[in-house]
Image (cartoon, rainbow over all chains, first blue to last red):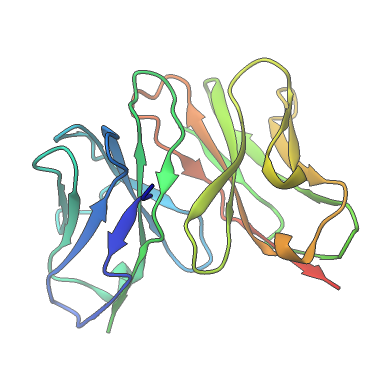
Length: 115
Length: 115
């Protein structure tokens, strides 16, 4: 009965480095979302996958951010040339489908700190 | 585009007292409405949602909320709070015409229940 899992739970990196954040959705969920939650703020949408394809990436802040979901299950959020402003909690959520509204189930998040 | 306003960043209340957490939204289209709770070091959990039908919706842990279309509000209420209700509460919307069903969150309200 596993929920959404995210690894690592914490990541500390230096400015300019590359990082990868992983999300394992609930088995069978076809929809996957990434959100970013900065300190004192609500989560902000980054990108949405339906299956393997990124159906909506309108929330990615710039071209340093990229996400993949090659087999329609696990997803990786990749951040190049990290900046201090990228420090936040990155949340992943999955949902059975988006043929109609379905509840999104959230993981515990990865806390990224850029020094 | 949609936006959500949670005017109260923190609400202190004594145990067993009633509480109301305010949420107002702005949207040019019809929306679905949600309340999520975030306990320390845990993922977001859905408390309740309004999709259609009765404007008074009941959720988990004794919470309820009322959709008021004319006031564009979706305030969360509980008649008697417990210490364990101490958490961050987020109001969120989804535009009904948004095929990606991405959540737009408010900035959150921290409920602090004191003995």
